[in-house]
Image (cartoon, rainbow, N blue to C red; front, side, top):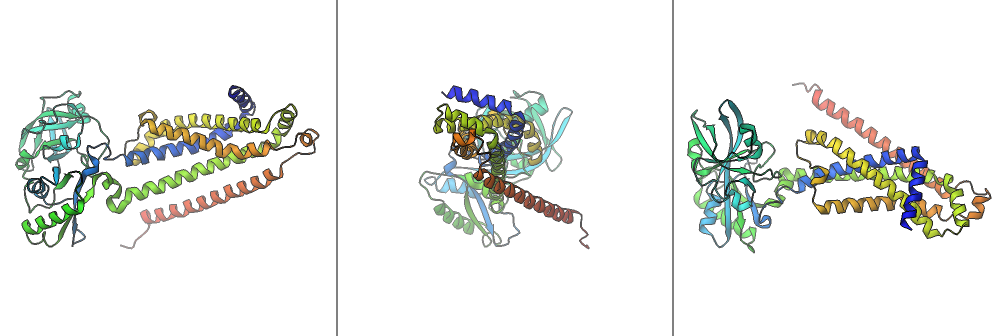
Length: 457
């Protein structure tokens, strides 16, 4: 039976090709926009989620009495002291200092972001390696771990174990570092890069930090990024009290009376940084995407209802020949489903076409349509079914309720409910379009004034 529904639906869709083209175009653009925004939102929500024991991982941040002070870091000795003094509460720790330096190999010289930290980086977070042993890659003072992209940039291949890179210090000296590990390409997270301005590509052992004139084991240095992994069942508030005690006991005046260390869950850090900027932006973009999808569904519904008059005689004949109302409803829902499936296929093509442009605009990685986990495809299927039901149920209900005698005798040439609903939907579409257009013009003028206006200074 379903096969017959699909055959009839396909015939109706191909016969009315202009209606089909308009409907598929409008709906596919809406679905493509939702896919693009949804993929960006998913990518942002996945930051840090791939790390080992993420439920117990925290970043140590600092609240200062002076609001202008950098709050993403803490004093260098704090994380290690917590592990040494309270091993029953702290499972592990990691600290790093970041800087840029000239890195060279033969005639290739580049300025790279470098992260220099404890040897616990890979084992604590289970960050995958293409080559190397995560337990020993940073045990040698002058060993280095590089990303796959960095290995290809300097050597043209990923298997660069035992090769050397020359890295310059701030005093002008250089030293060769032996590559002991190559990182797999992984999603961005705040352990590898704490913010967008910091794209670390080379990772060094803290044992060589003196070569660069930096200090990590100090209570006087409040510029070190610190992480701790709590043991299961340990509450962060308990550790925060201990941290404040250690800071007051060991740091000099100016730090002890101004800095208040706090623990921020690593799984929420990316979303909540900068007063929750990412979370607010994702909420806004999601609402915009849903609004555009809603407008596409309204357009789809409006066009479907406008075709009602052209289908009345067909419905009358089918009812006279014994067609049941539920069969007619299933027929129209099948047509709606087929249109939505075709629109989704077109939308996937549009997604792949516009994905590189979105990557360039947002400066982030957005996966191919095949790069999502399986549950995302389940959500996409549910979306298709939901749109099919929302856009096809009302026309199916109205058309299947027609009286065959009145239709065949020509007494019914239109449907009053259709006319009223169409007027409402058209008015709604034009009203929303006008509001969006006026809003876009105002925002454009504001941005233009902000960028080009004479501020009188």
